[in-house]
Length: 265
Image (tube, rainbow, N blue to C red; front, side, top):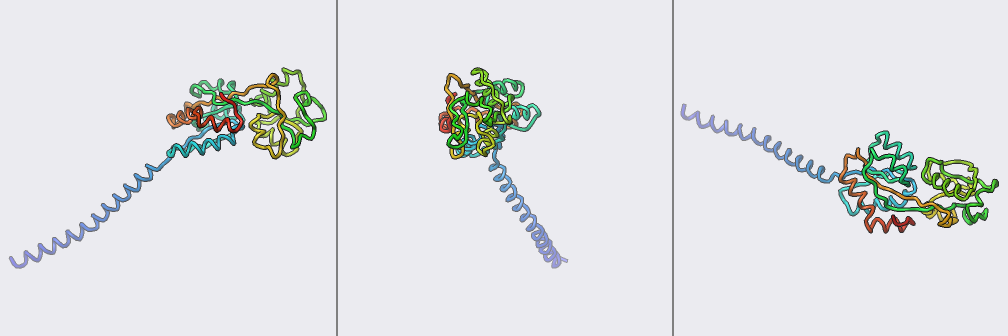
């Protein structure tokens, strides 16, 4: 009997060892998966959705790229539209983190939805005409000519409200061929030759110098557009949203804005 015990013990030991090998392998695999999962989680970026007025389209794309480069853990996604459209989206609960409008009136109407706003830039109106100003438009009074095809933004749009303000102040009556939902739509009509002239922001005309000319409006006859920025109370990234809004007032961001033609806040 004693001669059989040793072989049996040896066999049992071999079986046990054989069973432990795959278990060890499984343990190593789980460990690697865990490490991989940790790396993925660590590399995940905070994504911000910023609702911004149409007139900020070009400059914000540039500013966003600079911000992302400086803040490697944050990606900024912009949604551009007329300020009144953006306000409607906010009231309807659209998922977003921050808002920048082209007027204080629209922002003031969102006190229940947004944090304390900060004005980050200002702008002024110009008369956009076809390249070379073929209709020889020299000022606001020329827009009253019934032979001209003039396009304006709708009155509920900030640039449309500013346009009405300056025209009314000069007692100039204009019958627009269309009223557009945002400033970029007005600019597009002039670019495409579907209108002879339109009231747009100075910065918008500057984005299309190869297709339109800009006729300056004297300051005494002009209106100043203010751009307030604020975080949204429904943001799921409150700290990151606040950081971006704050950055818009920094010297670096202001340099980008003013380089695009916007005025100091």
